[in-house]
Length: 111
Length: 115
Image (tube, rainbow over all chains, first blue to last red; front, side, top):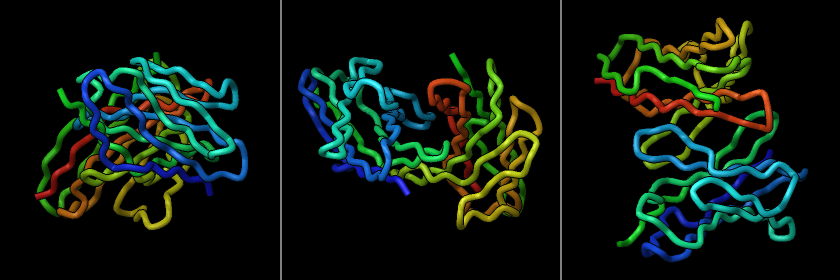
């Protein structure tokens, strides 16, 4: 079964600083990978997804992620953090139409 | 874009009663919907896959008699928590698979508190 691992349950960055949220996947076949954001007491909003096209994927709100097969990684980045980016972020992998989520990373933005 | 409406957003019920949560796809037909449970500060756990017109497929360890899922139309799936107990208190989220480009749209979630 495919899985994803998110390193770091909590990440804090200063406003304006680089955001880097880590996700590594485990898959025997080319995976379909997703990043979602969740604000308190809300559902999940898709940030971006990788579906075997370009390895650098650009998403909403200035986020992007790069699929690196050699490192089995799909890290999420944003050049400059904004206060509104404070939320929970989930990496997910799709297998047989089902999404399997990582344990999540809570992003805190320091003013 | 694809929108999934989930109701209610919050519900408090007494122990032993049943609660129904609705998940509707507003502007598209969803042949497949998914139900997740999220514990505080935890990830989402897939409970079951709901297919229109057929029985839901439950994940291992999920009690199908406690969590009844009905997907009677292409736009509506319901999750009924039967004989609820305090340990069923959680955040429940539905998701619908859109027809193109590996899209999944999520509802806004339901906070269930059993007292």
